[in-house]
Picture 1 (spheres, rainbow over the protein chains, first blue to last red):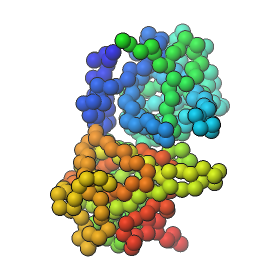
Picture 2 (picture 1 turned 135 degrees about the vertical axis):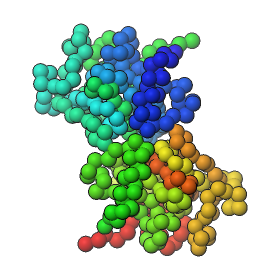
Picture 3 (picture 1 turned 90 degrees about the horizontal axis):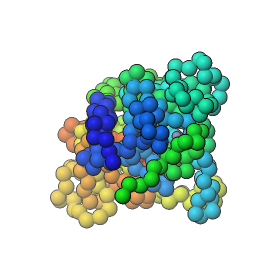
Picture 4 (picture 1 turned 60 degrees about the vertical axis):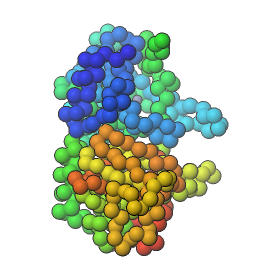
Length: 183
Length: 183
Ligand SMILES: [Zn+2]
Ligand SMILES: [Zn+2]
């Protein structure tokens, strides 16, 4: 079920960034809490524009300081016998700022983001990329990454290959990306 | 070579829609005139955010009444022996309005767009889809389509499979999509 206040705030942040949604899209905003029951700390709101067997596009909204937990998009065997190397994602910052962390040089002590307290063990990559409006970064398939909004929050367009959220591998073993369906 | 005034106008239309570009992107705006030498009538400006072997994302800008001529994206044999069914495109209107025409019911007499005079023979599909901000439409591979901006112009996000512009098939035989490289 949608939390109406949170969805309204997300719509408002998108509107401020010039992004218009249809009524239907507003009703289908996904609030991803990853089963951690602390949405304000680890969570994000998202609108899926299109997701098919060739490409996907979404709008992501993070409130100030909110974090999308560390994960990777693993390879997947397709029905036709081919192997998809895993989802590749391009994040383009539209508004606010986002601190993005990927595999590579960097350490926990020297980053702009604040790792969510109590979850330190589940954040392991610290190569920092700071995105402000107009900046973008492409994350290769099967590469660990996590990101946190700066003090103004962030609106981020995601362009990618096919999304299969249920296959995402999170570092935090407590996480279930796709929560049990409600009645 | 870029026409500075036209590019500045395109940047301004994107800015009004909340879309920020990097300096580099501003310097790489493509003004597609299709070799017809009448950019104001048949042409568009575009920014390619990302184009790889899996997905592509662009921003398209059309000035008031400007038209992207009728074309389709044909299947293509890939190096690994597979066949790509042709580029699939999702157009999402961000600002202004766009009149989009695809194969299906509809006739030239009853549409909102004005077919560019002198080019009537090269516009053959008239199934009308009107997009205003927040609306989107997905065009299947290898399907004829063309589009024209409404009176305020249009800013359109394009999400798609891989772009191979040089393979596009235009109905107008005078068109060359990718113009000869300048020194
Ligand atoms: Zn991801
Ligand atoms: Zn097209």
